[in-house]
Image 1 (tube, rainbow, N blue to C red):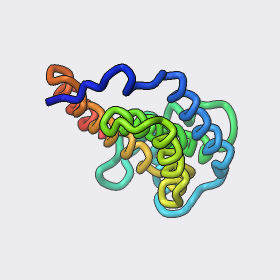
Image 2: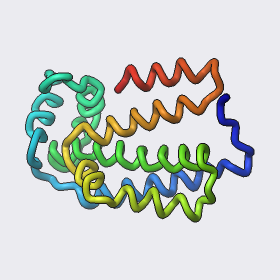
Image 3: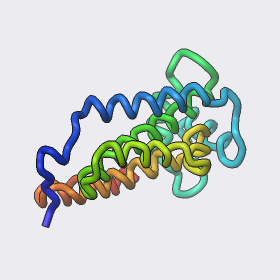
Image 4: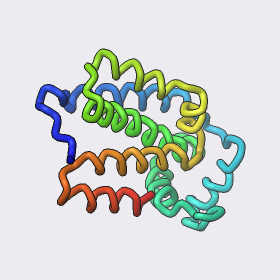
Length: 165
């Protein structure tokens, strides 16, 4: 049985946009213009030449990253980190919408929980560096959100999101 929340269980998209923009702007302000540690250099080099990083290759990350590298400001590392920040902020918005749809708690409870999650050290660390984890979480939340839809669209959307992951 698919979840079909009452209209009172949904909140305006404008609130989601405000939350997403607030998290994105904070993350964008804190992005480092320099290469980070671990795989940041490898992902930056593979994205710049549309190559393949270590297995599994993360093709969606590299294709989207190439678009972010085309931005005309800051360093390449900062621009690719912006992809992580955008993915992280969209993940927070999707988590907020998904939690509201599934759990049905009021926004006053869910908003602090989702924003607090976006500020935890492991998540924030991945949102501010050139890494693929924020995009992976966004796509995983997309699969979960698709599974809450009605049946004709559920399978197609879940398969689409899972295929991108």
